[in-house]
Image (cartoon, rainbow, N blue to C red; front, side, top):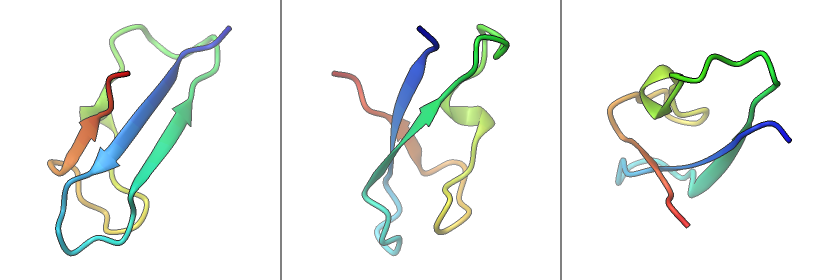
Amino acid sequence: MPATLEVKCTNDECELDMFELHYTYDMPDDVGVSDFQCAYCGGTDCLREIEL
């Protein structure tokens, strides 16, 4: 099963609570939160991985 990454935005001004990234099998193993930006506010340094 492809990897899933749960992410939250820590920007106090952003309305987005959390979102999930569902990778395909072709996604490189070294891809992480720092490779994405918030879909709502566009921030990059405000994203944090949610560890279950």
